[in-house]
Length: 91
Image (cartoon, rainbow, N blue to C red):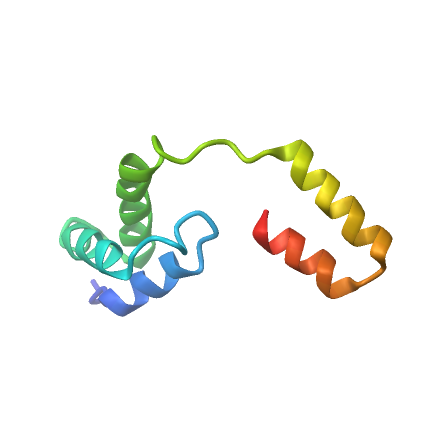
């Protein structure tokens, strides 16, 4: 069995749209706890994200989809590809 590196788990969680704004220290602590229970890197990532969901999922609301759709339509109408990408990135 290969060694699971903490930095690899942190990097995978950091690119997650849902958890990229969570404190690095919180993610580090949870990942450290979950690595010892994991079979491989993918399992460690999944366990860490599950813990993050248990902690933060109850406190994050649903996105305002009508507002986001309106912002996207405005960006498309503006014709600026970078604005469209920015709206999509924030969604």
